[in-house]
Length: 369
Image (cartoon, rainbow, N blue to C red; front, side, top):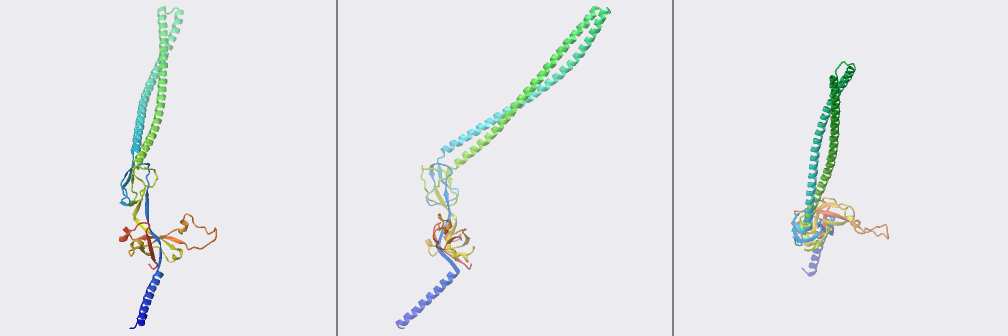
Protein backbone atom coordinates (compact mmCIF):
# COMPACT_ATOMS: atom_id res chain seq x y z
CA UNK A 1 0.00 0.00 0.00
CA UNK A 2 1.46 3.33 -1.04
CA UNK A 3 1.70 6.35 1.23
CA UNK A 4 -1.24 8.20 -0.32
CA UNK A 5 -3.56 5.30 0.24
CA UNK A 6 -2.24 4.92 3.76
CA UNK A 7 -2.87 8.57 4.53
CA UNK A 8 -6.37 8.36 3.07
CA UNK A 9 -7.23 5.31 5.18
CA UNK A 10 -5.77 6.98 8.26
CA UNK A 11 -7.72 10.14 7.58
CA UNK A 12 -10.94 8.20 7.19
CA UNK A 13 -10.30 6.40 10.46
CA UNK A 14 -9.52 9.65 12.29
CA UNK A 15 -12.62 11.27 10.80
CA UNK A 16 -14.74 8.29 11.81
CA UNK A 17 -13.38 8.44 15.34
CA UNK A 18 -13.97 12.19 15.53
CA UNK A 19 -17.48 11.80 14.22
CA UNK A 20 -18.15 9.02 16.71
CA UNK A 21 -16.90 10.97 19.68
CA UNK A 22 -18.51 14.15 18.41
CA UNK A 23 -21.83 12.38 18.08
CA UNK A 24 -21.40 10.84 21.51
CA UNK A 25 -20.59 14.26 22.97
CA UNK A 26 -23.58 15.73 21.18
CA UNK A 27 -25.86 13.02 22.55
CA UNK A 28 -24.35 13.52 26.02
CA UNK A 29 -24.92 17.26 25.91
CA UNK A 30 -28.49 16.68 24.78
CA UNK A 31 -29.14 14.62 27.89
CA UNK A 32 -27.10 16.65 30.39
CA UNK A 33 -26.71 20.19 31.64
CA UNK A 34 -23.18 20.92 32.81
CA UNK A 35 -21.32 23.73 34.56
CA UNK A 36 -17.93 24.22 36.15
CA UNK A 37 -19.20 27.18 38.18
CA UNK A 38 -19.72 24.98 41.22
CA UNK A 39 -18.06 24.28 44.53
CA UNK A 40 -18.44 22.12 47.61
CA UNK A 41 -20.30 23.78 50.48
CA UNK A 42 -20.72 22.79 54.10
CA UNK A 43 -21.49 24.06 57.56
CA UNK A 44 -18.68 26.24 58.91
CA UNK A 45 -19.57 26.80 62.56
CA UNK A 46 -17.83 29.67 64.35
CA UNK A 47 -16.75 28.99 67.94
CA UNK A 48 -17.89 32.03 69.90
CA UNK A 49 -17.43 32.28 73.69
CA UNK A 50 -20.36 33.52 75.73
CA UNK A 51 -18.16 34.97 78.46
CA UNK A 52 -15.15 37.29 78.47
CA UNK A 53 -11.83 36.33 80.00
CA UNK A 54 -8.19 35.47 79.51
CA UNK A 55 -7.36 32.25 77.67
CA UNK A 56 -5.93 29.77 80.17
CA UNK A 57 -5.71 26.61 78.07
CA UNK A 58 -5.95 25.65 74.39
CA UNK A 59 -6.73 21.97 73.96
CA UNK A 60 -6.53 21.49 70.20
CA UNK A 61 -4.27 22.00 67.22
CA UNK A 62 -5.21 23.57 63.93
CA UNK A 63 -6.96 21.19 61.52
CA UNK A 64 -7.55 18.64 64.28
CA UNK A 65 -10.69 16.48 64.10
CA UNK A 66 -12.96 17.02 67.10
CA UNK A 67 -16.26 15.66 68.31
CA UNK A 68 -19.25 17.63 69.48
CA UNK A 69 -18.73 18.62 73.13
CA UNK A 70 -14.93 18.34 73.11
CA UNK A 71 -13.24 21.13 75.10
CA UNK A 72 -11.39 23.59 72.86
CA UNK A 73 -10.54 26.50 75.17
CA UNK A 74 -10.54 27.13 78.92
CA UNK A 75 -10.77 30.70 80.22
CA UNK A 76 -9.49 31.92 83.59
CA UNK A 77 -12.52 31.41 85.86
CA UNK A 78 -11.32 33.05 89.13
CA UNK A 79 -13.68 36.04 88.78
CA UNK A 80 -16.61 33.80 87.92
CA UNK A 81 -16.00 31.53 90.91
CA UNK A 82 -16.00 34.55 93.23
CA UNK A 83 -19.32 35.66 91.74
CA UNK A 84 -20.67 32.16 92.30
CA UNK A 85 -19.63 32.26 95.97
CA UNK A 86 -21.21 35.69 96.35
CA UNK A 87 -24.45 34.40 94.84
CA UNK A 88 -24.43 31.38 97.18
CA UNK A 89 -23.87 33.65 100.21
CA UNK A 90 -26.67 35.99 99.11
CA UNK A 91 -29.01 33.01 98.78
CA UNK A 92 -28.15 31.77 102.27
CA UNK A 93 -28.79 35.27 103.65
CA UNK A 94 -32.18 35.41 101.95
CA UNK A 95 -33.08 31.98 103.31
CA UNK A 96 -32.08 33.06 106.82
CA UNK A 97 -34.17 36.23 106.56
CA UNK A 98 -37.15 34.18 105.45
CA UNK A 99 -36.62 31.84 108.41
CA UNK A 100 -36.59 34.78 110.85
CA UNK A 101 -39.82 36.11 109.37
CA UNK A 102 -41.47 32.70 109.67
CA UNK A 103 -40.38 32.52 113.33
CA UNK A 104 -41.84 35.96 113.94
CA UNK A 105 -45.12 34.86 112.38
CA UNK A 106 -45.17 31.78 114.62
CA UNK A 107 -44.54 33.94 117.71
CA UNK A 108 -47.23 36.40 116.64
CA UNK A 109 -49.71 33.55 116.09
CA UNK A 110 -48.99 32.17 119.55
CA UNK A 111 -49.40 35.67 121.04
CA UNK A 112 -52.71 36.07 119.25
CA UNK A 113 -53.94 32.75 120.62
CA UNK A 114 -52.87 33.83 124.12
CA UNK A 115 -54.58 37.20 123.67
CA UNK A 116 -57.76 35.55 122.44
CA UNK A 117 -57.72 33.29 125.49
CA UNK A 118 -57.23 36.36 127.70
CA UNK A 119 -60.15 38.07 125.97
CA UNK A 120 -62.36 35.06 126.58
CA UNK A 121 -61.32 34.93 130.23
CA UNK A 122 -62.04 38.65 130.59
CA UNK A 123 -65.43 38.18 128.99
CA UNK A 124 -66.20 35.42 131.45
CA UNK A 125 -65.16 37.75 134.26
CA UNK A 126 -67.45 40.44 132.83
CA UNK A 127 -70.34 38.00 132.84
CA UNK A 128 -69.61 37.05 136.45
CA UNK A 129 -69.25 40.70 137.46
CA UNK A 130 -72.50 41.51 135.68
CA UNK A 131 -74.26 38.77 137.62
CA UNK A 132 -72.72 40.07 140.85
CA UNK A 133 -73.93 43.59 140.01
CA UNK A 134 -77.44 42.29 139.35
CA UNK A 135 -77.46 40.42 142.68
CA UNK A 136 -76.06 43.43 144.52
CA UNK A 137 -78.70 45.69 142.94
CA UNK A 138 -81.44 43.35 144.13
CA UNK A 139 -79.98 43.24 147.63
CA UNK A 140 -79.57 47.02 147.69
CA UNK A 141 -83.15 47.54 146.48
CA UNK A 142 -84.51 45.25 149.22
CA UNK A 143 -82.29 46.94 151.81
CA UNK A 144 -83.63 50.38 150.77
CA UNK A 145 -87.18 49.19 150.95
CA UNK A 146 -86.60 47.71 154.44
CA UNK A 147 -84.91 50.94 155.54
CA UNK A 148 -87.84 53.10 154.38
CA UNK A 149 -90.37 50.81 156.06
CA UNK A 150 -88.44 50.69 159.33
CA UNK A 151 -87.98 54.46 159.18
CA UNK A 152 -91.78 54.92 159.25
CA UNK A 153 -92.18 52.32 161.97
CA UNK A 154 -89.51 54.01 164.06
CA UNK A 155 -91.30 57.31 163.66
CA UNK A 156 -94.47 55.61 164.93
CA UNK A 157 -92.49 54.12 167.85
CA UNK A 158 -93.51 50.61 166.82
CA UNK A 159 -89.97 49.19 166.43
CA UNK A 160 -86.99 49.60 168.70
CA UNK A 161 -84.02 51.75 167.71
CA UNK A 162 -81.74 48.72 167.71
CA UNK A 163 -83.71 46.93 165.03
CA UNK A 164 -83.79 50.09 162.91
CA UNK A 165 -80.02 50.42 163.24
CA UNK A 166 -79.59 46.83 162.01
CA UNK A 167 -81.74 47.56 158.93
CA UNK A 168 -79.79 50.76 158.26
CA UNK A 169 -76.50 48.85 158.53
CA UNK A 170 -77.84 46.24 156.11
CA UNK A 171 -78.72 49.00 153.63
CA UNK A 172 -75.28 50.55 153.86
CA UNK A 173 -73.64 47.14 153.38
CA UNK A 174 -75.83 46.44 150.32
CA UNK A 175 -74.90 49.83 148.81
CA UNK A 176 -71.21 49.15 149.40
CA UNK A 177 -71.50 45.69 147.89
CA UNK A 178 -73.26 47.15 144.83
CA UNK A 179 -70.51 49.70 144.34
CA UNK A 180 -67.86 47.00 144.67
CA UNK A 181 -69.65 44.80 142.12
CA UNK A 182 -69.95 47.73 139.71
CA UNK A 183 -66.24 48.47 140.12
CA UNK A 184 -65.41 44.84 139.40
CA UNK A 185 -67.60 45.00 136.28
CA UNK A 186 -65.77 48.10 135.02
CA UNK A 187 -62.42 46.44 135.70
CA UNK A 188 -63.47 43.30 133.79
CA UNK A 189 -64.76 45.40 130.87
CA UNK A 190 -61.46 47.32 130.78
CA UNK A 191 -59.59 44.03 130.69
CA UNK A 192 -61.71 42.87 127.73
CA UNK A 193 -60.97 46.11 125.86
CA UNK A 194 -57.25 45.90 126.64
CA UNK A 195 -57.04 42.25 125.57
CA UNK A 196 -58.93 43.06 122.35
CA UNK A 197 -56.56 45.93 121.60
CA UNK A 198 -53.57 43.68 122.18
CA UNK A 199 -55.05 41.05 119.87
CA UNK A 200 -55.55 43.66 117.15
CA UNK A 201 -52.01 44.96 117.51
CA UNK A 202 -50.58 41.45 117.36
CA UNK A 203 -52.73 40.62 114.33
CA UNK A 204 -51.41 43.70 112.55
CA UNK A 205 -47.87 42.67 113.41
CA UNK A 206 -48.49 39.18 112.06
CA UNK A 207 -49.91 40.56 108.79
CA UNK A 208 -46.89 42.82 108.46
CA UNK A 209 -44.57 39.87 109.10
CA UNK A 210 -46.46 37.74 106.58
CA UNK A 211 -45.86 40.55 104.09
CA UNK A 212 -42.18 40.38 104.95
CA UNK A 213 -42.28 36.63 104.25
CA UNK A 214 -43.67 37.34 100.79
CA UNK A 215 -40.87 39.81 100.18
CA UNK A 216 -38.34 37.33 101.55
CA UNK A 217 -39.64 34.58 99.26
CA UNK A 218 -39.32 36.90 96.27
CA UNK A 219 -35.78 37.71 97.40
CA UNK A 220 -35.02 33.98 97.61
CA UNK A 221 -36.21 33.47 94.03
CA UNK A 222 -34.07 36.39 92.92
CA UNK A 223 -31.02 34.99 94.71
CA UNK A 224 -31.66 31.54 93.25
CA UNK A 225 -31.82 33.08 89.77
CA UNK A 226 -28.57 34.95 90.49
CA UNK A 227 -26.98 31.69 91.61
CA UNK A 228 -28.08 29.87 88.46
CA UNK A 229 -26.77 32.75 86.35
CA UNK A 230 -23.42 32.61 88.18
CA UNK A 231 -23.21 28.85 87.54
CA UNK A 232 -24.09 29.40 83.90
CA UNK A 233 -21.45 32.11 83.53
CA UNK A 234 -18.89 29.82 85.15
CA UNK A 235 -19.76 27.04 82.70
CA UNK A 236 -19.14 29.46 79.81
CA UNK A 237 -15.44 29.57 80.73
CA UNK A 238 -15.11 26.10 79.19
CA UNK A 239 -15.59 26.54 75.43
CA UNK A 240 -16.62 23.34 73.64
CA UNK A 241 -16.98 22.26 70.04
CA UNK A 242 -20.54 22.97 68.84
CA UNK A 243 -20.46 20.14 66.26
CA UNK A 244 -18.22 17.32 65.12
CA UNK A 245 -15.74 18.21 62.39
CA UNK A 246 -12.33 19.75 61.81
CA UNK A 247 -11.34 22.77 63.89
CA UNK A 248 -9.43 25.44 62.00
CA UNK A 249 -8.63 29.14 61.79
CA UNK A 250 -7.58 29.63 65.40
CA UNK A 251 -7.18 33.34 66.13
CA UNK A 252 -6.19 33.48 69.84
CA UNK A 253 -3.23 32.52 72.01
CA UNK A 254 -2.81 31.60 75.68
CA UNK A 255 -3.07 34.70 77.87
CA UNK A 256 -5.04 36.66 75.30
CA UNK A 257 -8.20 38.47 76.41
CA UNK A 258 -11.28 37.35 74.47
CA UNK A 259 -14.61 39.09 74.56
CA UNK A 260 -18.02 37.49 74.63
CA UNK A 261 -19.24 37.19 71.04
CA UNK A 262 -15.74 37.17 69.53
CA UNK A 263 -15.09 34.32 67.08
CA UNK A 264 -11.97 32.43 68.19
CA UNK A 265 -11.95 29.59 65.63
CA UNK A 266 -14.24 27.60 63.35
CA UNK A 267 -15.36 23.98 63.23
CA UNK A 268 -16.03 22.72 59.72
CA UNK A 269 -18.73 20.07 59.91
CA UNK A 270 -17.95 16.85 58.06
CA UNK A 271 -21.37 15.23 58.16
CA UNK A 272 -23.36 17.62 55.98
CA UNK A 273 -21.69 18.57 52.70
CA UNK A 274 -23.36 19.59 49.47
CA UNK A 275 -22.50 21.20 46.15
CA UNK A 276 -23.72 24.63 45.06
CA UNK A 277 -23.78 24.80 41.26
CA UNK A 278 -24.54 28.09 39.54
CA UNK A 279 -26.40 27.21 36.35
CA UNK A 280 -27.37 29.71 33.69
CA UNK A 281 -31.04 30.51 33.74
CA UNK A 282 -31.32 29.08 30.22
CA UNK A 283 -30.20 25.66 31.53
CA UNK A 284 -33.02 25.21 34.02
CA UNK A 285 -35.88 24.45 31.62
CA UNK A 286 -35.76 20.65 32.03
CA UNK A 287 -33.99 20.52 35.40
CA UNK A 288 -36.01 19.14 38.32
CA UNK A 289 -35.34 18.09 41.91
CA UNK A 290 -34.31 14.46 42.21
CA UNK A 291 -32.39 14.21 38.93
CA UNK A 292 -29.06 12.38 39.10
CA UNK A 293 -25.88 14.45 39.03
CA UNK A 294 -22.33 13.35 38.14
CA UNK A 295 -19.70 15.39 39.98
CA UNK A 296 -16.00 15.68 39.06
CA UNK A 297 -13.85 17.07 41.87
CA UNK A 298 -10.90 19.05 40.53
CA UNK A 299 -8.68 17.94 43.42
CA UNK A 300 -9.28 14.26 42.61
CA UNK A 301 -9.23 14.13 38.83
CA UNK A 302 -10.98 11.05 37.48
CA UNK A 303 -12.79 10.23 40.72
CA UNK A 304 -16.46 11.06 40.70
CA UNK A 305 -19.17 11.72 43.21
CA UNK A 306 -22.82 11.00 42.66
CA UNK A 307 -25.60 13.24 43.87
CA UNK A 308 -29.04 14.51 43.00
CA UNK A 309 -30.65 17.88 42.49
CA UNK A 310 -31.94 19.01 45.85
CA UNK A 311 -33.43 22.48 45.46
CA UNK A 312 -33.22 25.77 43.62
CA UNK A 313 -32.36 29.11 45.19
CA UNK A 314 -35.11 31.64 45.67
CA UNK A 315 -33.31 34.27 43.56
CA UNK A 316 -30.33 34.66 41.28
CA UNK A 317 -26.84 34.96 42.70
CA UNK A 318 -26.72 38.62 41.68
CA UNK A 319 -29.71 39.41 43.88
CA UNK A 320 -27.84 38.07 46.89
CA UNK A 321 -24.72 40.13 46.15
CA UNK A 322 -23.63 43.10 48.23
CA UNK A 323 -24.61 45.52 45.45
CA UNK A 324 -27.39 43.88 43.41
CA UNK A 325 -27.78 45.30 39.90
CA UNK A 326 -30.67 47.66 39.20
CA UNK A 327 -31.49 47.68 35.52
CA UNK A 328 -33.76 50.69 35.96
CA UNK A 329 -30.69 52.91 36.33
CA UNK A 330 -28.21 53.63 33.56
CA UNK A 331 -27.92 51.81 30.25
CA UNK A 332 -29.41 48.33 30.15
CA UNK A 333 -27.23 45.43 29.00
CA UNK A 334 -28.83 42.03 29.18
CA UNK A 335 -26.68 39.49 31.05
CA UNK A 336 -27.58 35.86 31.45
CA UNK A 337 -28.13 35.29 35.16
CA UNK A 338 -27.13 32.25 37.16
CA UNK A 339 -29.31 30.41 39.67
CA UNK A 340 -27.65 28.58 42.60
CA UNK A 341 -28.75 24.94 42.62
CA UNK A 342 -28.17 22.80 45.70
CA UNK A 343 -26.97 19.30 44.90
CA UNK A 344 -27.14 16.70 47.64
CA UNK A 345 -24.25 14.22 47.77
CA UNK A 346 -24.14 10.47 48.27
CA UNK A 347 -22.55 10.13 51.71
CA UNK A 348 -21.66 6.47 51.09
CA UNK A 349 -19.13 7.39 48.44
CA UNK A 350 -15.47 6.87 49.53
CA UNK A 351 -14.64 10.29 48.11
CA UNK A 352 -17.16 12.01 50.41
CA UNK A 353 -14.80 11.87 53.41
CA UNK A 354 -11.99 13.55 51.41
CA UNK A 355 -13.75 16.61 50.05
CA UNK A 356 -13.77 19.93 51.85
CA UNK A 357 -15.99 23.01 51.58
CA UNK A 358 -14.72 25.40 48.91
CA UNK A 359 -13.35 22.75 46.52
CA UNK A 360 -14.09 23.36 42.86
CA UNK A 361 -16.15 20.74 41.00
CA UNK A 362 -17.74 20.22 37.62
CA UNK A 363 -21.30 18.93 37.63
CA UNK A 364 -23.46 17.30 34.97
CA UNK A 365 -27.18 16.88 35.60
CA UNK A 366 -28.78 13.93 33.82
CA UNK A 367 -32.05 15.34 32.50
CA UNK A 368 -33.41 11.86 31.67
CA UNK A 369 -33.26 10.53 35.26
